[in-house]
Length: 370
Image (cartoon, rainbow, N blue to C red):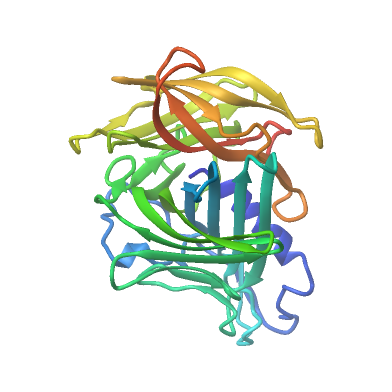
């Protein structure tokens, strides 16, 4: 959900690489004027499943749980980002980086004890990478995420030693976040995104791992979000979760942390088992850390277990495995933790499981600096 700052870091790094930057030495350029995110914008579908290339940044973010025959549960993540650079050249070359595409995939494997992950980046064009308007189709080389005419998503990633081919079928209507898809991310009205989710996706497909291919099934959550404005200058990081509840409901909750570790802003949305939707104000979302984990590679300490409470619902988030740290210093320039979590009824590790989801923690390895 909260991938704005990571995506902008990717864009800045890609623009700085000669192999990816267009040669526009003799072409004029101008600063780009991005459209604002407005609360009176009405989302329309299928149009808004597609790319919004005028905006600064955008992502399609799949997270979920898989079950393989005879094995334990696995977590997975497949993400595509689009970023529009801050300057635009008049150079007509197809190599002109008008849009940048970044993809990331990860598999949370308890048998391995850590994540398997891979990433790709490219500028849009020449048929090698892109993000289409009008409906979901985003790709880099053979990695892709698309929404078919049958209403099902299909995702394919192929990494060293592992890969995924998944079909994801909606089982309920999509969920507009915030006020009709206008989701505030800070005290200022401009600190916002257009944002919707598709919880309770039914997953089937193939997992390739260590030379073997097996059928898998599970459930997933899709976030699609696009924005223009960077987070409030006082923000140091964020905590976010999306949980598919066992009763058929869904919960999204987040908080933006300030430089002292306190909450600068918070929000969330719950859809209950009967389909009723409630949007939460900042004061209605409570995050309390329960346990920390220190990365043996980076030394960063992450609060990997939480007690999360909103009106009418409380839960404890417990990780599928502690080591779900993503080291993006070679691409996004930052460290963060994102992984599969169980949602338990309050009462500790013995509490009954009430859902499964994903948890994202950023800014714990140092203040994110754009």
